[in-house]
Image 1: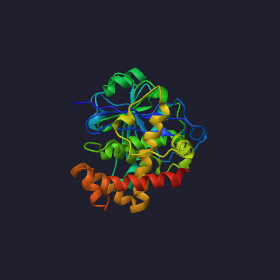
Image 2: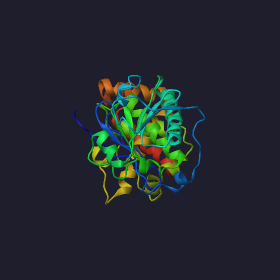
Image 3: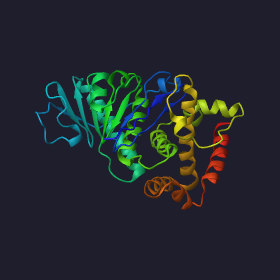
Length: 303
């Protein structure tokens, strides 16, 4: 299986979300370093659905294929309304809470994509086990990894997120599980997942895009939509990485506000099947026209 991995980072002012293909590649999710005060201090609780716990028998055939044959002894399964959470040496109450949040995240993704989403979430007992399950070398600084049709939680880092942060992480990850990212420009799949993740989070735009807002207020507008190089993790320039995600998010947010959310979803699907230029043409846009209008939108939102 080919592997494409992108990082999700928690920036100074916002959750930064980067996705790899849910159908073919692990996806790293944000760690907690630099989490903004606005996100850190929010305390919105999870949804109030019930969740049931049981200890799986070996080879539990009732589980989704993505959750079978993991740990045997020491594992527990929580079933939400539409989600399945499997934990290794995890507290049942924490698994119940995660199932409730996964149910809500699935509903949010379904509301945008227009089809059911049934989350499968794995909670290994440690970061090392999370890396093993997801098949990646390291999960340092990450809160979750999207691996195929499932989300693998990095327990030490996920526990440090606020309730709002956990909801955004799960919603973002499940967007990729449901929508995929193959054949898409990075700004579109990163921005789309951020769009869904932030859609119901209640964060002001200037808070969610704090790093980009600072640049705009200083008179520096982005010149072009961010390409793959802009999303490369960099310990030397973390604010640049933050801005890349924020730029991508605002591009998708602009399309949704200007043309409608359904049009953004159609663009995403058209781009997967026929390429981004063809998708934009159906909106009466070229890449250059979109870039110009997006720059105006960024200035209007953040100046």
